[in-house]
Image (tube, rainbow, N blue to C red):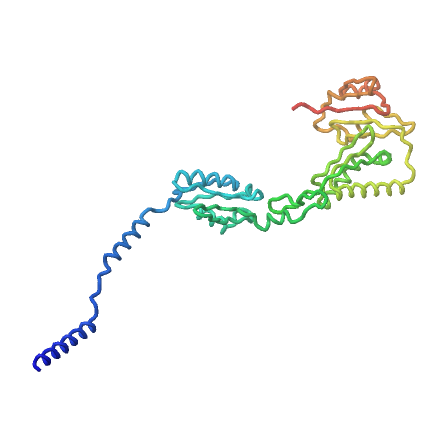
Length: 334
């Protein structure tokens, strides 16, 4: 009986100890060594600073010039090689002068995007694997230049950069002036044409040349410029009709060089003029005229040189002119 009681008391005591042990919390393990190891690893990873370009000086130029400068300075500063792709429409665009310090490639390109310095282009970063590639894409202005296509040639109507439209094509037109020269001088006609061009802002890019042997006025210009010439000549036609029939013209002589109105001088019937008269009808000598070198040419026959003093001495030198004769006054040599 005593044995049973002893055994029962022992079992109760053991159960109580076991219950108390389960209720007590387990001792916490220290995490300080682990945290210390992680902190040390992070410090080792961030210890090496990212290379930058200490001093970037760019004197201004094209996009191509900027890329060349960045590659050279980046290589000297220890940066990875610069990978760049540029569209042909923008690689010749102008980049302003830059002076930057302690910058990377991204800093430069992002700054250009913000100031919109390269036309309307946009620098974008493309990352593939471990490589980084900067791409300069054309903006809306460059794309607009290629929006229109010539249906005949299939070529863009725009010239590319900035969307500037192309220059209109030039044409050549030839006008016969013989009928107008019965009343007007060549200089009168060309002056009227230039005046009309100037009043509407169309003088730039047009050319006029008079071929005296055929009385042809040769014009090169845009269609709107040539139309003005037609209008001027049409107005001259009206003037000729109002003034009545013109006197019959036997021919003309030509006075060139240092005179105030070089060109042809018309000869009427029963009319004879000499060299001095032809010079007077051409407005007289200019201030640059060389009075000691006035040439007279009768094509296929003779050519002579006179001075103004000789011409004033009479018919010996002041020769009567025939149709086709040429008088030329040379300029002084300063």
